[in-house]
Length: 104
Image 1 (spheres, one colour):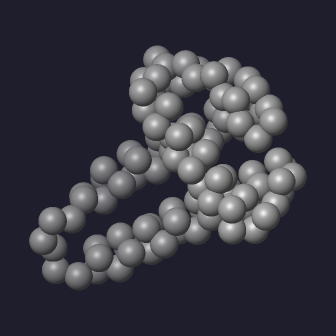
Image 2 (image 1 turned 135 degrees about the vertical axis):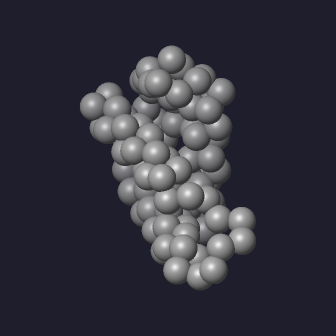
Image 3 (image 1 turned 90 degrees about the horizontal axis):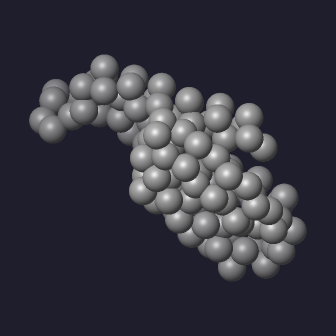
């Protein structure tokens, strides 16, 4: 079980999750990277607007990856991730999102 202290966009709180702390740190680092891109590209400083746009960008990235994986699953296989592994990744992601929602 991992723990993470989140200090971003003018807010601070702690979370605990099944994943290890390093994984959680990597997620936060990636989120902060996306948030900085949003601020730089839009000039927004409002934390709520930045977090919403960051979330949309991350959803777009996830959606495109899922769509590409779905399309690749229809093609003859080379080095594809088995569908059962994708399902596990989706379950882990949904658990993380649920836990973060509960903390917020």
